[in-house]
Image (cartoon, rainbow, N blue to C red; front, side, top):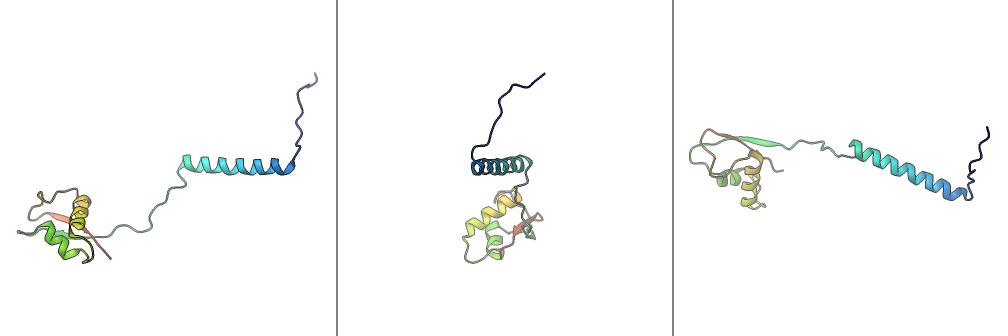
Length: 103
């Protein structure tokens, strides 16, 4: 039994090597994307300050006390609400919230 199939011959070695290298890069990229190797993880964890709500406290007052002076107070209040999954009207005395720490 003899094999009568086509025989392929490389006509241009440079094009073949370039194509093979690009295919290897593409396959490595595809495998790393599918497997999740290209995800970046933060080396630092967000730090926060634990605050116990006192009678008469508002998020506005807490934002003024713990936030930086060069940032809009409304933004700090919004970040506190998002960080703790609360609204400004739903806080109560004795509640403990975490305030993002600004450096």
